[in-house]
Amino acid sequence: METKSIVRALAAIAHEARLETYHQLVQAGPAGLAAGRLSELVQIPPSSLSFHLKELVNAGLLTSRQEGRFVFYSVQFETMNSLLAYLTENCCGGDPCAATPKTR
Image (cartoon, rainbow, N blue to C red):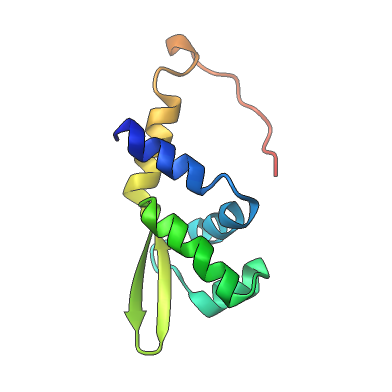
C-alpha cells in the first residue's frame, strides 16, 4: 500500500461519524448494509451520512453497489488488511507484543 493511500485512509476514518460507520460495516461483513439501515444504526441523517460514505469510498475503504432502489455499502477488506499490515509491520521490533485490553 502506498503512503498516499495510507494517509488518505487514515484521514477518512479520523472522524467520529466515519469511524462508527466503518465499524458498523466491518461488523456487517462482506454483504454490507443498505444506506438507510446504516443511517439508523449510526443515528446520522441520510444526507449527512451520504457525505461521510463518499469520503470512505474515495479513500478506498468502502465500495457501494446498487440493488434496486437501495445502495449497499461494504468494506474493502483487502484495503483494511493492507492498512493493518502496514501499521503493524515490524511491531515491537520483532519481539512478541503484550496483549492489551480491548477498549471502546
